[in-house]
Amino acid sequence: MINQLNISTSKVAAFTCLLTTLSLPAHATNGINLIGFGGESTLMAGADVAVARDTSALNTNPAGLAQIKGQRFNGFGSVLRTLDLSHQDQFGNNENASNRYTALGGGGYAMSLDSLPCTIGIGLFAQGGAGGVFKNINVNPALGGGQDRFSALFGIAKITPGIGCQVTDKLSLGISYGLVYASLDQKLFPNSSFQPANFYGYELKGANTIKTSFKIGMQYKATPQLTLGAAFTDKTKLPLSGGRISFNQTDAGNGIVTYRNASISGFALPREVAIGAAFQATDDLLLSLKLNWINWADAMKSSTLTATDPDSTSAYGPVFSANSALDWKNQWVIATGLAYKLNDKTMLYAGHNYGKNPVPTNTTTPNLAAILEHHYTFGAAYKFDPEWTFTGGIEYDPQVKVDYTNVQLPFGTNSELRNEALFLHFMVSREW
Image (cartoon, rainbow, N blue to C red):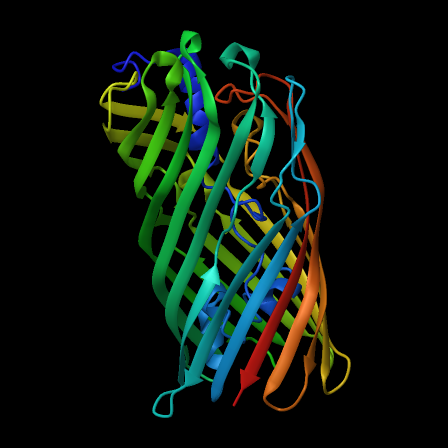
């Protein structure tokens, strides 16, 4: 389709920057997934599949809902501080992202049923979050030079009901089936227009989607001390539509041209298989392990943007279409965590999560923070009374640096991406 539109090579290279960055949140950890959900899950570094016992089980292992007796509410949140999210390239750029802080939140409610050995619940989870905002990027002189803005703000949220049932004394099964909402705003040099290279900066707004998600899980108490767990998460396609994209075609004499219908296909939350074990080593010490296979190679293979219905004459014609390779690799994540009961009121948590960066160097972008690999967590929970508990802690993601050359981007060769992050996690819980 690109050849049919007779689009120049340089224009395609600049535009495909959009297609390689729009789905990548700045706080991405295991790819575009967070390492955990809720206080205990996160502070045990995601080693949760065999432990899940609060409402975050809806998004980790719904079989764990069966451990909730009576009613339970969890309200959880996180604040991300990017310590070093930076882009460097041959055009003199060494720019830190300006959006240093990102807030995430969610919550869940569950209650056990009187008539069945089951617990039902519903939860809202931030699955992904804001992207990087680079305000003063030097533009490739071949594309006009000067400074301009480059940013991507992408969000993924999930609302999911679910049920977990105690099938036998040892075995519990669970399922959650919900809705995933994703949206995108993105800019690439919106104030730049350079006719000789057919480069026109752009701004994309309002592309979004709502799709269903599906997860099943099990927990099996092999011995009084050892619990085994497993969960399967199906792939959720995220075709974004309903957006508007505006090109700065001032240098071509067209001014700002807005395509009133923009859609992006090819992105997805991946299929996942997780297995794990939790061992009650002593009355006070719980050790947990999770091994998680994430099918990024299928979820993030390539993408296509299509824009139609321009509001005026466009140098691109009435239809714009461009394809981009992503070529992510499948990822194995190993999470280990512990919970130590210090006394009747205080529980201590710690964990480590490792997943190799799934993004190849030839498709890495400065808006992509999915390069983080190691994640260290520390925290505690304090039980104020039989009903109320507060959980809080930190997650530190050490700096990762990637040297890359992505010919799909307008940043030349020998670019560098750095990322380092710190999270504050907290959760308020009530049981009654």
